[in-house]
Every structure is written in C-alpha cells, then in structure tokens.
Length: 145
Image (tube, rainbow, N blue to C red):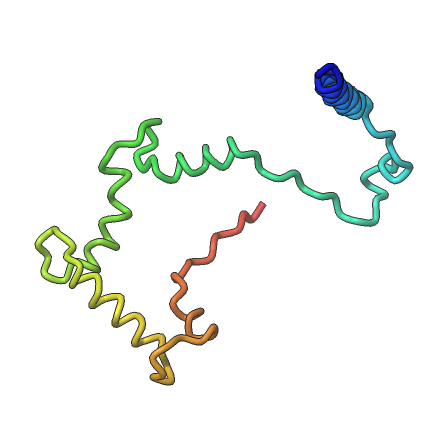
C-alpha cells in the first residue's frame, strides 16, 4: 500500500514540475523580444522589397460591418435597416407575394437553379457546373488615394 501512495505522490510531483517548467519557458519567451535584424534597420526609402501592410483587426472589421448596416448613419441599427437587404432576396423567392415562403416556392426556385446549372442534363453537377451556382458579387471599388 505504501508503494501505491509513493507512486501517486511521485506522479503528482512530476506533473507539477512539468507545469512549472512549461510556464517558465512561456514567460521567458514572451518577455524577450527578438533582436532586430540588419534588414530591419535599413531605411524604408532604401528598402528594395515593399513593406507588408498590417492586417485589419477584428474590431475594425466589426466597425466596418456595423457601418454598412447603419444606413442612416445615426449610430444605431434599427430592425428596418437590418431587414431591408434581406427583403429583396425574400421577394424573389416569394412567388405568390403572400409574404410567406412556402417550401414549394423555395423548392421550385432551387430546382430551377439546379436545372440551369446542369448543362449536360446528367442529373448531377460536376465541379465546373456547381461553380456556376456561386452567388454573383460586384467588384469592390478601390480607393484612388
């Protein structure tokens, strides 16, 4: 019985020691910044390769998404502002214009989309045929600055 308790105690000590070693290495790596290279010390005007632009942060993306949804730019998104872009797609699917989308209305539109994409009328879509079902996107305007 004593060997059992000694084995458990030694296992716990090993786990604790490995945890402390792991955390000390993580803190050491976080505290020491990498040394600047000679290429980084070169003047940006003399640098041959273009500089890499920083990636947008998640907050910036959310701010842009919020700005797109806030149509009247009052800092608040109303239900109407949120639903307006979706209404156009809903209206296309609502064939009888009753304000409700029945399964049959959706199935007809989806079946028509499948039939239009199935160019060789094989009853299944190849990768090239499936690519034609991708939503059409408009190119974004680039800043002229």
